[in-house]
Image: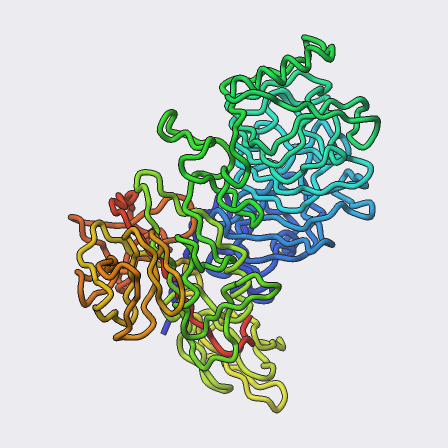
Length: 636
């Protein structure tokens, strides 16, 4: 019996395992790994230091919390896909000296000591890198985060620089932090300091300072941000959007925490009038003409950040379809780091809110808890069930503009610590006891005690790569443990979606509802179900067969959206929370792989074939989160 190979979306360049090294935070092994796709390491540190020749690329997925502050400024750390890898500094650890792409980086502080970075060093290293080790300590040569498709949350930036050079694209700067020495600057090296970025969460001018570098900012959205109006350099903004909660300031000193900063209040009912108001007030204050900012095709929006982004306070900076930063209709493009997307709120109570998760539909080993009165989907570790699911409300979409964004990584990584995968198929294979012959493949240690294998002592949750035939393992101590085969540990985290183009049936107040069916109140009056008011446009999942809803209007009818006993069957398709939605179809029929799983961007195996962007030509869509748990939390 042989295991299936690991499947990665990123192909290696150069020598696999040496030039390009692979890391899986869940199923890799620093003991048995060799950095290949088949046998990845578990930590970034091991991947970088395993061999005397440093890798040029580290491809990774998973959650990482480790010290990564000794980069050589020539190595890139990349998520296997956007959102595949999250680096959490936990307020203590740095990730510095590397190029970063397709990652979420959060809670990285300024260093408290002199971080050695090969041939250069500087006291205030943060997220970023210089263009060479010899340039470390020279702010003009810092590339910001030196990459693309990166989300930075509550993280320090090298010298406090928001931006970089032309390499900084599709970066989210979410509430960056700084120290008293270097307030945050909107600046960088070269002409183009940022392109298609999102800058949010620095509302206090005391956290800002003037910049003398960086000239052009293009396609960037600013929200809840304090802008310095009188910079030390002439700056051009091309195709940028400024939310209404962006403030503009005249600094009487070079820093916002010195002198007497004065706010410039914009007036006017249109974008053009507000833009002109800013320029006029700068002229009145005697700002030099050769420093006057230039705004080309910019929008001074009347919308707040909450009206531009789906959930900025929760870290979701995907754009609300149709907002002022969404130019799909006019220019077939958008402003900012992330595209227009459906908001899939997993941290919000869905009561009375259309388009979020229906917490009453949760079942199995999933539960909805409310720590600090914030409802959250979590695992029920006391549940005897190994599976669980929860349904979303019905979403009404514009199919020409749907993009399913990678906003799930943080929740997914939390559930992994309980030995859970967001996938309905079983990824665990045969279980082997001490003394039994182990086929070549990947295994995870499960049980109460440690084991001894190939001269190493391993604990529950450790992964093992068996590369030789005829080997066995022994128990270490008196407690019994086993080794469980990992059949396919590389399935991408996914939810499932199904869609319906028209309403096939409706039911009234005197009709019985059916267990598991999803109903949409598409009428004009509110209805009541389980003492819960369902407003027009809101949906719910029926909890018990034979139930009914009530309404003051006894003639009210509601739509049956998903009930296979009343309407034609609808197939659940794995839909990855990343980028566009792709699906494999032949003659309109959804294709399946050799294991009977629909081919889509939610199924990694689908990348073995050519996929076309789904037409998604339906009006109504519903999501279902499915999980499978292994053990009671001892598998990490």
